[in-house]
Each structure stands twice: as C-alpha cells, then as structure tokens.
Length: 367
Ligand code: NAD
Image (cartoon, rainbow, N blue to C red):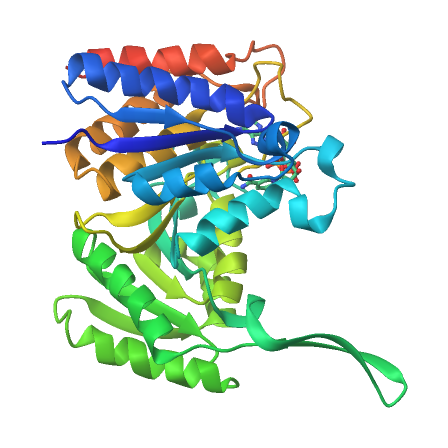
C-alpha cells in the first residue's frame, strides 16, 4: 500500500511558524503510530511571489492535484498590499480552491470547555458546542454572471448574480448529508426561499437528496433566522448546509462563539479522486497575522486541528484524529495558553513551540 501523501504549503507570516508545529505531529504519528506520510513542501502566497513572481507556481498547482491532501498555513502580508490584483497572495489560495474544484467548505465550531469563558456568549450557551457548517464554495453570488459596475441612466449600478444549478446544490448537499451520517444525523439547510428563487431551488434539491439519507433528520431555516438562532441557542444545530454568501457570514458568526481565531480549523473538499479520497485542502481560518509574525506568539492549534481534519476526512484515520483533538483539549485543560487565549495579566503565555510541544506530550500520554 502506498503511503498517504500530503503537500504542505506554509505560506506567509505565522503560516511558517504554526506549520512547524504540525510537522512535529506528523513526525510523532510516524514514530509512534507507524504511519508514514509522504510529505512534500512548497511555496504559496507572498513566499511564492518572492521566488517565482506568481502566488502559486504551475508546478505547485500540479503537485496539489496529485496528493491526497494539501495543508496550507496562511497567505498575505502588508509588503504585498500594493501588488497587482492578479498576483496578490490570496490569488494563490483562490487558484488552489478553484482548480481543485473544492466545492464543500467545512467549518467546525467547537467550544473546548477550557475556553468557554472566551466566547462572547454566556458559558452555558456555548459550553459543549459542536456544530459543523458546510458552505458551498465554488458557485453562487461570488461567481454568478452577469456581474460588474456599469453606467445606467446617468448613474453607476453594481450587479452580482446569485446563480445555482441543481448539480451544484446537490453535490454540496451530499457532502453535508454524509457528514451528518457520521455525526448526530441532523441537518439544517439554510437559504432565503421566502424571497429568492435560488433559495426555492435550494430547498427543493436538498429535500430531494434527503430521500437517500432517511436516517438524517432534515430541517429548513431562513438564513436570517439561522443567524439569530446561532447566537441564541447554537447547540440546537448539528450540521448546517448553506450557500456561498450565507455560509461566509454564518460560519464567521459561528466561529466567534468558540473564542479565538487561533483555534479554528477548516477543510475544503471536492469530488472523489481515483483512490476514493476526496480532493482536499485543509487550512486554519486565521490569516498570516503580520502583527505577531516571527515572534513565536502564534497559536498553532488551528493548524494542528486542521491536520486532525485531514486525518479524519482524507486519511481514514478517525481514531488518530480523535486522539489529536483530545490532546489539544488536554493541553487547554492543563492551562497551557498562547497569548490569544489569555485574558489575565501577569500570566506568561506559552510560545508557539511550547504549545506544540505540549500537544506532543499529551499525545505521548495518550498511549
Ligand atoms: P489575521 O487572521 O491574520 O489576524 C487577525 C488578528 O488575529 C491579529 O491580531 C492576529 O495577531 C490574530 N491571530 C490570527 N491568528 C492567530 C493565531 N494563530 N494565534 C494568535 N493570534 C492570531 O487577519 P488580518 O490581520 O485581517 O490579515 C492579515 C493578513 O492575512 C492579510 O494579508 C490578509 O489578507 C491575510 N489573510 C489570509 C487568510 C488566509 O490565508 N486564509 C485569511 C485571512 C486573512
């Protein structure tokens, strides 16, 4: 059997630092769990621009298409702000998503008990929270045509088009139902069928797909109500499936229920490859954090938890994913904190590397 393959793209700023901690986890799994990954590393974002004049080289793109999973750190930084739009660091990320056709964006919002005080909501509302938002990522109003700004009757008019085909709604829905099957078997689909035709189609298609998943309890909710429910009683949800625009907003809203950006992983999945594994890219939600880059202050947990998602969704290593998530939870419960997770004065924060080492120690203790 061939080794699982992974392309690591640390990117810019703290991307480099947090990825170094994931490397420790990969090495640990190799040494202690006897699973060797074929790991290659390459450039993306500003780092790729500095080397190649583009934010993602063609060879890197080709590699990304071949591997079982891509793990990306973060891209961007103020030194690239004035670059032409076509070569901005973010374009590297968008190219990966587009060419790998990663249509399902998975954004878990999980509240670790030790961090419940960090949420903007009351502890009892978020404690034990574990929801998954599946956002359609490659279509909808961010891509629909016509689009643009034009002059009509002497004034400028801005146009974007919300457009979804049945196939686009369906493939994302299947990904969401499959996830629900592995979780609490509840799926809430969110749209605005009351005022948008694309929402009516969305509801129809999701209902149709649900016939193939009789064990999953399906509900529908208007997305504006969904936003209210997310902050009123988020624990009512298991999996939420929604479109690109609503998903963008709802997933950020859900993210903040859990405390810090430094704790939030994500996965973007596409169609199955020949080996049955989905095309996949995993990345922390946070950016390159130029304000703390190079200072050893970054929290590596979001990137480590993104790798845990890779173990679960790309490598069929659910038990190892559970172990890694439990290790992060233990570290937090033991009080190890990077600066973003501290609100008491006088407590010395752990460095990025100390946090990573604590996770490794917790993994050791789990054996
Ligand atoms: P950011 O996520 O980089 O940082 C926002 C704030 O959160 C900063 O104060 C930062 O120090 C803090 N923070 C973020 N991650 C942290 C971590 N792991 N540990 C501790 N603190 C953390 O967002 P920004 O400042 O708006 O953007 C900075 C750059 O990153 C920009 O160039 C932006 O375009 C880019 N960006 C990239 C991605 C991506 O690569 N996916 C996402 C968002 C922003």
